[in-house]
Length: 446
Ligand code: IFM
Image 1 (cartoon, rainbow, N blue to C red):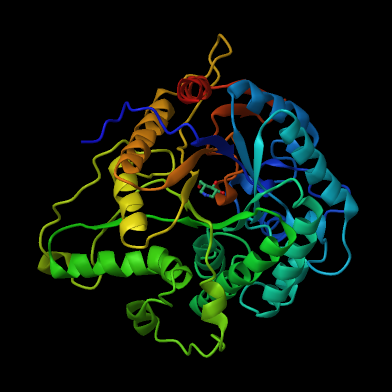
Image 2: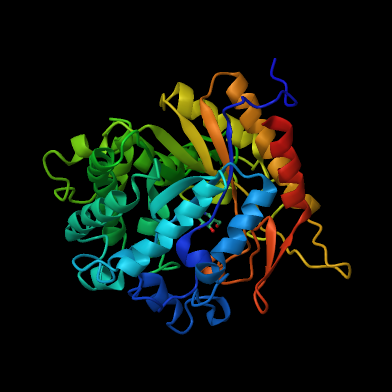
């Protein structure tokens, strides 16, 4: 029997996560180059209300205060991403020392106050100069990524030991190049598939570079994983769930687990796969120290192939609370997913690198932000993690998404994921009830 009240292991890491473009602002300061998200968000009609990350949470200037906040919350770790265009404004070639300096100071201060830095190399802000050469669908990007990895891990690898190569490559490839909802806003499935391969190859090739530059490195990749559940017991719905699982989850899980691209998906896409060159798959399956899991919700899969009236009636419906993103709150699926990652894929170590929810938070008359739905979300998902650990899943840490309310990509500033509220006019930070709850939870467990 598992016990949701059992304390977490003593060495479990308690953290919070953010990403460069979503919080930093200072988009054109100190030599930072243009990223695809600058270009995209500055293009009329691409983001809600034309919001951009130009200022965001102004973390580039307020980082000292933000670290104080983290310290006050008792965080043991902070996951942030490095903006590639701050380091190499043109993607390759000349290095911007001011950019390195920003992260160097941030890391020094984190270590000074006892917070472990977990750095993500790529959280979607590709230098626009590389997009101009074809972006992720072009193979040249792999060498560029390796160059960037080499530069930044040489500079910070003496102090950052925990590195995540990519955040959610499915989103970069398919939302950016196929659905067009994210930068660079293209709508080509061919490009998306090429992009996914070059993202994975960039990951595979950069892992040895990190290990070479960082003594005692702990290296992983973060995937967004969404369990898919058939809407009815019909064969058609089961097939739909398997397809969607292949599209979002297995397309990335399988290649990094020495299984290659899933055959059913290769068949379904029916593309010329000659872009996969000899040796690529060996590089992609390089052993990693951990898998980063970003989990938010499950999806119910209904076949679009069989007309509704010929399918079995739907028997599985959303039953959890629905968040501002229109995502169902369903913590049981996190437990199931973690079991799958351990017992089907055998990952040696797992971190929950993102988990959280957007709700319409407001500062009340007393200057407080009560967010009971978020408290319940975090609590129930931590219970799933706890149960998973008890059945033998090696989950070693949890990073709530997000430390701060921030720029939620195409949704601009309309979705608040933070445990800390940000007033974007004044940049005032206010701890929400969830931040205080999390602070207590950490204290109880360390
Ligand atoms: O805000 C994003 C983050 O950048 C990547 N993972 C999902 C979050 C919520 O949508």
